[in-house]
Image (cartoon, rainbow, N blue to C red; front, side):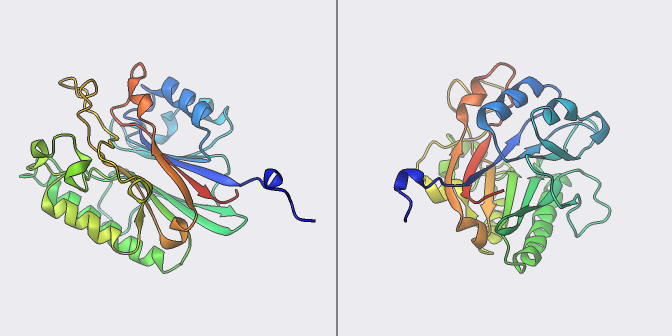
Length: 274
């Protein structure tokens, strides 16, 4: 006998990315958000903590497994998940001398096979007339080559994080203010679209083509109050992951919390089962 529509329950998984801008400074906000949002996998950036000082006990008390790739005072990424990963990789190939903690990949088992989720914190690149901008472009090229290889596995792959890339003029309230910035230079955007054109789907834009979608508001000059934002936090989905996408949204309300990060979470829902 077939099930009635009311008896059919969709199984979904939430995957989120959030540049927390200092996990110890925002731990109360993080715990509140985890309870409110209930992501199955949360990708954090700029944890600004070495691994041994990361506040894992408070997070584990909410039922999350914690994997970190930390660095003292700046950078650092983490994966928080309701299920432990089968494998964790903490280095982006291509430059053995690079000691900045900007990349962590978790491989998770689901009833439909392996799911790969990366939390990444792409270099800012400013000032552009220093070594920081070539480093940014080189890092993006390394990510491109790494992604080429991972896509050959034909598994759901999600690259989630703070890309420090404004893809299009409409992804900034005042794009003219960013024309000489590393986040918006033509070379930066070209590198982003080169990666995207490997076959990735940019989750937010695949479900919402509206203007005025931002994920970052500076602390200075009343940017939040004026809604003077930019969209630099993205989730890129491989073809296998894009087929599962149900919804994507920017959780803008968290920017209005006390002691907020200057970024807000971006959350996707996929049709899957942990």
